Amino acid sequence: MAKMAASIGEHGEDAFRKLFKFYKRRSPAPDLSNVVDFSKSVKHEKVSTTELNPAAMSDEEARRTGLRPVRDWRAFGLQGYPGFMFISNPFLPGSQQHWVKQCLKTYPQKPNVCNLDMHMAPTDTQDIWGKSADVLRKPSSRIREPKTLLEKLRWVTLGYHYNWDTKTYSADECSPFPDDLHLLSGHVAAACQFPGFKAEAGILNYYRSDSSLGIHVDESELDHTQPLLSFSFGQSAIFLLGGTQREDPPTAMYMHSGDIMVMSGHSRLRYHAVPRVVPAPEGDPLHPSLEAEGLAPGQDPAQGEASVIQSMEKEEWAVCFRYIQTSRVNMTVRQVLGPGQAFPLKDKRTETVKGYTEGYHDSQDGENVGLKRRRSSNSSDLVNVLL
Ligand code: OGA
Ligand code: MN
Image (cartoon, rainbow, N blue to C red; front, top):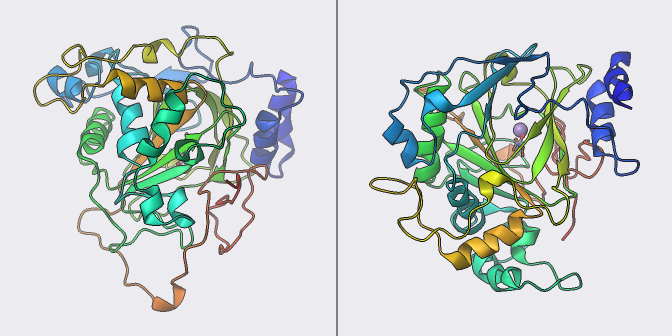
């Protein structure tokens, strides 16, 4: 079967889709032995180590965003993918929890935008956490209960809000980018030799154990000289990174909790997708890097003066813990405009009414069904898991 994964792509036509389907398949489950695992000490032949800039920030500055000193990070490159960097969980023990909580409690709040806003009144979506927390905290098996809003959350946008219909960002659909994530992103980009990076837009994706993210290229940002950063938390997933053509067979790799990916240079505009979440077997503890009970104020090693890492109430972590035991959250951070760059003037005729969208989430083997959407090389915006 491993052989199949390798040979499937050799016949040219849309090798990406074939591999997407291969890894997405439920029955029989695909052989995952060809999936590159950067966390393993024995490295795949295509994996190389990458130079970071250890002077990009002081150890203290790194600690303030929950990161280890840069000299301790394990960063890798992948043969055939110049500009792609993979940093294997550089977070301090106990600090990923902050970012998980931000994704579940803080970032979905207004004025940020989420998939639920597309078909619910603002009053109904303004306290997603508050409306879900009590139910999620309950230890009972809730199989027949309706899903909480948090469980229905698929995406949140930050900063310049990505418009899924027009596939553009604009000056008038913008809210303040969260300070803590801005700082974290600036640190990571600087360590990867992009000191001028400005976090201006974020797309957060929320995955249940059966979710997948369709094949796409992130090309809507106006400045492609800056990297795209991706932060993963919770359950592991398989990421497919291809070429600039759908015919280029992608490489499959694991993303574990705390892992960061950087797509820049020649890898900035490549096709990619997430065909599968790989949940830990039931009964297994959370990923060790996430295994920490509610952190009382002052206990967190990353806290302290000027730290953005907040203390966590036990009750809050109980909800996050519940959620993340079966789910995955990914934050992608982008710079939209280059220095001195501005958005083109809007052509009123191309304005569209916002339709319902699940963002990049997929249910059609990676393909864009094109509902209410114009064709574009940016494939796979897709309506999928109806609520
Ligand atoms: C995206 C994206 C990957 C992921 O949001 O553009 O590619 O791991 N996300 O969720
Ligand atoms: Mn993407």
